[in-house]
Structure formats: structure tokens, C-alpha cells
Image (cartoon, rainbow, N blue to C red; front, top):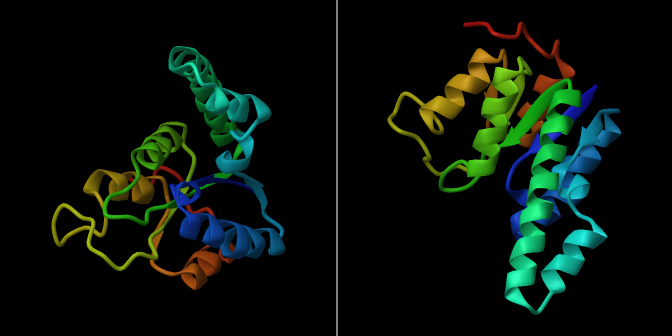
Length: 165
């Protein structure tokens, strides 16, 4: 099974540590093939653009690279069997929310993982942004609150019927 890993984990040192040393090894250890945007989008061209000292040149080059990264991520979502979305943070990462919506629109099931115990919801009827939670559940997915629950959901009869609502 091919899993696209959506989420903000690559933005922080702690997130990268969890991503590289917990999440990815545990998923790969179960035989899942990961489509990881933190790996797919990292390239020598990106590093070269970030090192440019002329800010106008850097901005221009990064715009080109950003489009390439966005297109590559969309293609990876389309190639995936499901999207695993990390929802940690004070609010769901905007890029992750976009990937969830895109996956839903393309009838890909989404599994949401929120190991963060803080409230990030619109009201007591949801655990995260109500629209994000809706798209996850309407895709046939579930929202889990621990790594063990995430692994159990993946190891069960996943995915459930897509477009349940």
C-alpha cells in the first residue's frame, strides 16, 4: 500500500526527529510504501535557490521550485492509496488541510493523526477544524490520537468505504 504523508513535521527539529525516527520507520517496518513530500521536495535545486544572495533571484527561482514541489505533491497524492495526515499544532497546517481537501476530491481515503492533546477545534463537536474533520471522515477515514491507534487503523481493514457520506 502506498501512503502519502501529509503534515508539518519537517518544519521543526522535534517534528523531523519524530518523522524520521518514529513515524517513517514504523510504517516502513510494516511494509507500507511511503510517498513523503519532505523527501520528494528536497532537491539540490532547492538548496541552491535558498543559498542565492540576491533576493530577487532567490524569490524568482523559489517560485519556480514551489510550483514544481506543489505539482509533485499532487502527483504523489494521486499515486497513493491513501493519505495519512498529521494534524498536530495549534491549528491544522494549511498545506496539510489543502492536501486533505485534494485527496477527498480525488476520492482518496484520509487517515488523520493528532497526537497533540491541545484543542484545535471550532467547537466541542470536533477535534480539529470541522471542515478538515469532515473531509477525513467523509473520505472513509478516521481521526486517531496516538501512534498506536494509527498503526492499528492501518493494520485493520483499511481503507473503509470511500465517500461514506
